[in-house]
Amino acid sequence: MAALREALSWFLNLILPGAGLILRRREWLGFFLAIVFGIWGNIVLAGWLIAPAAIPAWLTDLAFLFAVLTWITAQFLFRRQGLSQVQCANDVSTLLREARRALDSGEVEPARTCIESGLAIDEENVELHALEARLLALEGSEVGARRA
Image 1 (cartoon, rainbow, N blue to C red):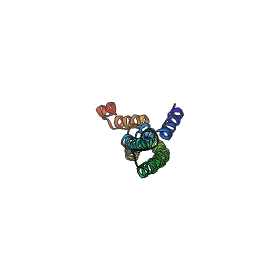
Image 2 (cartoon, rainbow, N blue to C red):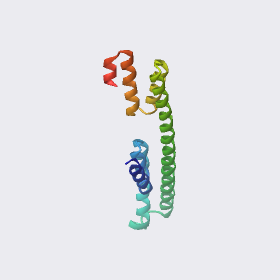
Image 3 (spheres, rainbow, N blue to C red):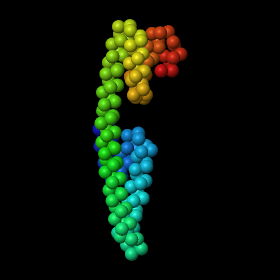
Image 4 (spheres, one colour):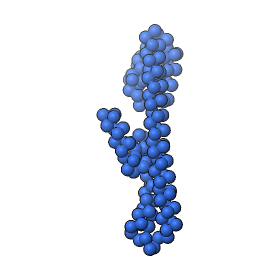
């Protein structure tokens, strides 16, 4: 499922720059790039196909240049976001492993540090929330454990 979503976001980002970033939860950046590309692209289409006599050639050429630059920027940012996601996943995996080890050996403070650091990276990670609940239950905070 994740591979299909990744392939879809890559494909969409190629067709409409910024759409892939929206699927990767970079909504505002993706929306901005899609709007900018759409504006420049409409000027290019109008200058080439719709009303070439009404739109100066220099404006059409400039709009084409900006549309291409927007497309390249969107591809670069999409790639950088993908690399960042991989690094975050690796960091969270390491923190999960350390938190489990600390909880298994009864070390509360190192476990808390690992869990809080992991949640700062990925606040939606279910495993981190489960470890947080386990930690809070170990400390005797039933309300906090239920919340987590």
